[in-house]
Image 1 (cartoon, rainbow, N blue to C red):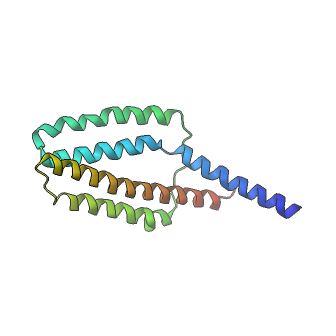
Image 2 (tube, helix red, strand yellow):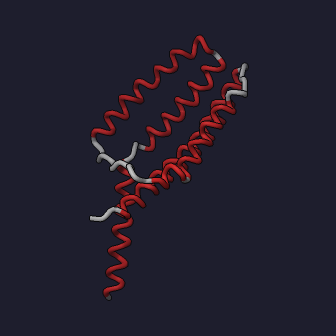
Image 3 (tube, rainbow, N blue to C red):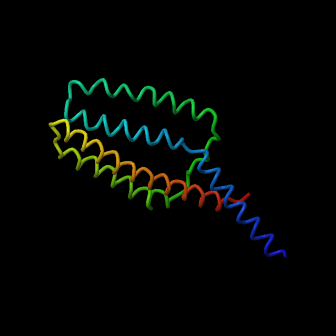
Length: 150
């Protein structure tokens, strides 16, 4: 009876800590919107440089959304001493993201269909990398929280 009760308590604590990590981060819709706006801005800056300047103003409502969303959420604990975050999957996906953006600069889209295709490819690939980075970050936060002595 004691083992079953202890196992239930451990499972409950694990679920609560995972939920806490997920709810203290940025909203999923915000991350998706940020990646979508970034894909459009990065593509249009290369395809139509003079007209694309004004698309960067789309970041202003995103900043306001983020500030308002952060006011109602719990403040996440800093990961001051987490070497696994910088040497692990998070850093790998971050470097892949930088390489992806630089490689996409070689794709010169001039027609409207090419621009739309480049926006879609940029969005899908960057969203995949951002989701993987967020999962690695959440895992590092869980591991850091489990290692803390109460």
